[in-house]
Length: 115
Length: 114
Image (tube, rainbow over all chains, first blue to last red; front, side, top):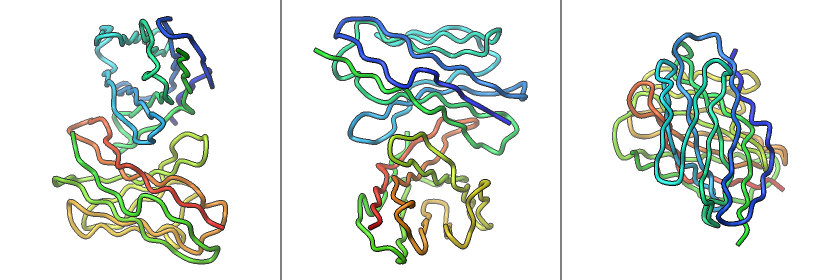
């Protein structure tokens, strides 16, 4: 069975603060894939990043960065210098290599960035 | 990326009625997924729709309640049958790109059942 835990239900920060969204996962698959998605108030889910289990390199994309650590089964997401437009629900998801393409989503973290 | 169009975008339905949601993708895909997102909740997979075969339903979802059609590689429908207020949710169509492929989502269909 697969499980994704996003312990932070809601986070509120002031613009320009850095914020980290936590994601912890469980899987028995040796090959798996981790994702982050953003759901802004408009509702449409947007893919942000994918990370393979065999690639623990961290990634940076502009103000976004991701820290993947297999030793702690975590895939955390940091937004640097947050902006109001970053306000959204962020979902972490896991897809195992043997589960016929199905993704398991965490409960999501609602991020509010105040001006 | 994929362009996914869903209809209707929202609807208000009466208890006991059924509603069919359509999902059109701009290119051919093998698997299409139907998710439900109840208010303030995460996404729950309802079923996987493969072209030319019966949909595969997740635990807690049955074909009689959520019949799915997949007539070709770019189109699918999900019907929510005999609706009750508990079916009020956003229903999302999604497809994967590549292997293992991230998911791309339609805008969702927001159903309110009175």
